[in-house]
Length: 241
Figure 1 (cartoon, rainbow, N blue to C red):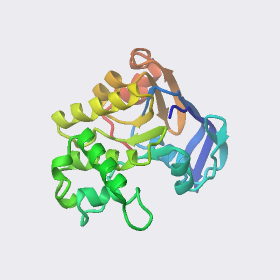
Figure 2 (cartoon, rainbow, N blue to C red):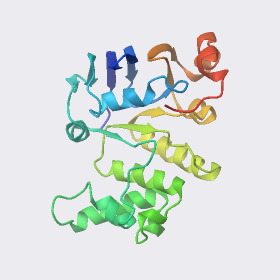
Figure 3 (cartoon, rainbow, N blue to C red):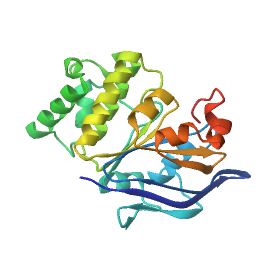
Figure 4 (spheres, rainbow, N blue to C red):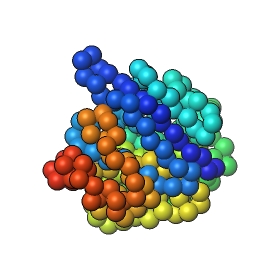
């Protein structure tokens, strides 16, 4: 289950806007890596480039030694890279359990799929809502549902886009605890987040983007005091791109 995700010299432009400019980072196997930066720095674009939602202009993406550059989102997911989105992508008119069965089945669901789905809903703390319409969940509960949904496929690497964004403090603690448990079991994480307390308390390594360029990489304490990071991000009020 353990795998390393490596991004090498990735660039992406939208017309005259250079969204990513030679970005390189490594989400080391078995580690939690944070990706931070100010508004418009390219974090979500990089996530989209990694997972096949955006075609890159230059550079490479590897899962361990396998090149996944240019693969479709479905192929990237099948190879073992799962992701969530800043705005959760769930099926609001399906029940929570039915949402969980969507990625688990082709045709009719099996008893084994249902049991696995319920295990993951219990793990994320929302099994009590299994029969409720997903659209009735709070925003934080939707984040937990999307995490459980991604875990159905048992990915080696999980990319989380703003897991703490818009979530109440008690659920933030619950999300952080679940990430730690999954990581302790060997799963690799790459997390985009603007909640600095969340990032600094959870991640082993942090990479900082500014204007599409990596300006710092290192342990949280080193990044926190880096002058370029303070200028680019921590010294200003910022939200995700």
